Image 1 (cartoon, helix red, strand yellow):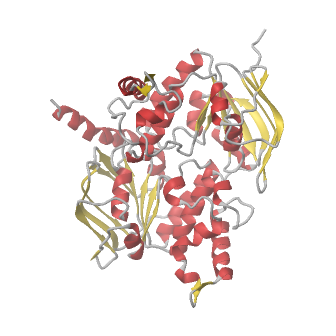
Image 2: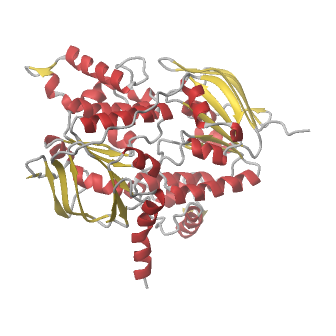
Image 3: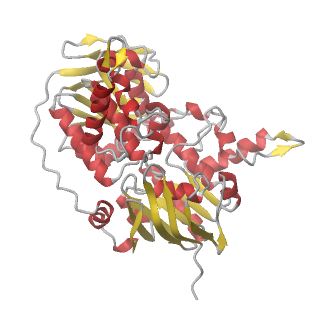
Length: 506
């Protein structure tokens, strides 16, 4: 006789401004990896937040190993063995990595925290995700998003759990980190832990999942054995129709140089970086987590202080004095950051406010905001970006992660910057939305803008870029042009700087 389900969900409902879960049913077996897929706003993350006590459902029944599961807080859910690694990074930025890993169960002796034991246990937890070289006393705010994501995963794996929820866990990871994560997932499966795996990456789902459930507009559409699915079939169920075929781009002729970076240095992660980007060109930055990709964009944009080097903007090659982001915006540079939650959005504010934040003077008259013009701009860009919402007055915090990312991009479309820096532009975005953003990037290039794109997905860079620059250990180590490039060549280059550093070590 088969085991009773580990988790059983019946008729779950949840609404905000609009319904996000409608009579949702779901079942998870012991030791099963059950993937959850759907478009942005389909209800995946809301369902996960209900299970881990972050959100209360309106109605419905949830059973965990036959007992009612209705956690009012995250602590209650964790006490029941339900652990979640959120898509939105949830570390306390002013605490150390070790303190974040064991926040609710700090080792103590004589009424005081035993920091020696804490550091030892933290090193073991970090080693499981390939971060054995990371100092556990490092503050969370000093880590890049990729390392923060790995710390979040390490925290989940370090706890005793019956049900582990992973919400887009690989969005900021490269292949070696993903392989380590999958090794840990298989270890947990062997211990009969049930795993809900939320992801837009179809190749990962077929590789790691046992079953796949599809949501659309808050409703259960279908559940399939993962081995029998195809990306096209799942996407059809997610969006309700086939995606239109993307036409082959015409051969492009690049124009004048709009961005030139010369000998840029900023800490250990950005060392003598030099490159240029022309009008109409999309240049990709590839590399492993910690290679310096994000830090390079932040130094160009003035978000991080550069120690040396120069940035030139415009076809007249004018040297740009950039000491802060407002300087970069003034000379025509816009940046879509990797961490949209903390660096890209005012979460309590509306779509309208977030979209027009960088163009307030353009919507003002005699010192007063022209509300009609501001609303018209926000509505036009929301339609262009296909933002799913109840209207431009809806708070951004109520949107799905993918729709939040579209709002960030909309802000810089409103500004009409000549140079755009995209850091992981499709992180946490479904297949349909990815396709629309790829088309947007090509449209922007066709308009003559210069684009720099950082992505952890090599296939993405190979699909959209005119050139790919590879960073390794803070240095620019290689440049690739089509058709003389491959995933293997780029991966080898990405490791080269780290191997050289290891060989130089005594």
